[in-house]
Length: 212
Image (spheres, rainbow, N blue to C red):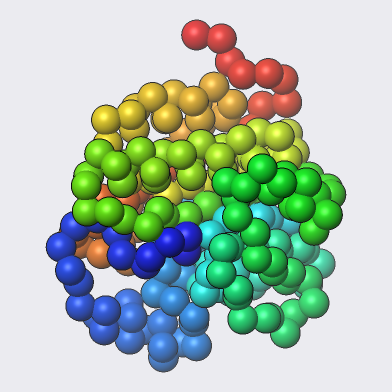
């Protein structure tokens, strides 16, 4: 999670159903249930796949992704804060800032091959000013899309969390320019007051962006 874990909206009680369920199941964060639901609805990841998780701390998504791709796959997780190491050797993590000028080069140092999916759970440090927070969220989502377009293999998938706002439709069109299908999901584990939604791009096209 980039920035603070709070999303726009009212304060929430952290020890809710999903928080307790995550503890019971040994998951690092309640957010694990979000990506689990997305993958069950759209099973775009197979055993042996390679996936990038942006904004991966504390590792809830990584746990689900590792189980999904298995030891024959590869999972890369990055965040601006350190992620507690995983015991599985095919899960690699690093402290990287996606908005830094050297991010792309450092990501290639970490893994230089193509990804079968790029998944972003990044969220900005919120200011409480809705338009500001929406703009920050959009900047992170666009960076994730850029990584997906440049590093995703043809046929790959893209998932990005985004705060609903004025430029939301514009971003959805940007995703549609590169993927055959675009879906929107608000997982059941999303906090009630949150403005977040996940934009999912399925089957990245091998050629350039679609013409309108």
